Image (tube, rainbow over all chains, first blue to last red):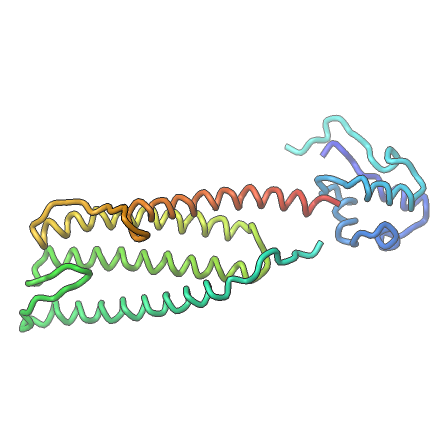
Length: 72
Length: 176
């Protein structure tokens, strides 16, 4: 998928664990894992807003578009 | 996200299918052994009605026709078995699975083709056993040929709808 989720980088910067982020955002660990591993098909604005709020960052810090990174 | 049950469980449908399947198997076994008895006990000469056809003597043609009708009957029982299995899958609160999609398609195909084969069989059976020529494809009630064909095609179409729903559900499940 051309959109890459850089959650691990932000989690490391904020010194936060995945389960802590999932609890604060209000999603399950499984869903967070889907997001981190790039399997997610879509993300709700409400979820993105909650992640940015918790990690104190911009959407662009988490989402990155990489040209040519398309699954065949 | 937990899968919530969006509809009640089809308990009555499941029960009817369970009873129907058991009865069909019993009837088939009894009819099978009765046919074997009639074919191989040469002393029995009285006319016998089997699958709605009166058989006065057990020559090659009636035996072949009975065997073919049995095969169609087994196909019908298998269709009911698949239908029962499909309904049981709905009890697991999982919808739009690949197994359900494949089952719906297969049930539809079986209804469609077995109905057509039955009409063809009836044509030849009537010709050889009753010396009559004709095709019976009534339209008057729920057991009419054309209605059953529609039901078969509906199952096939439902399978395609389920497949579309599976894709939508997958996308929804992967939406965080």
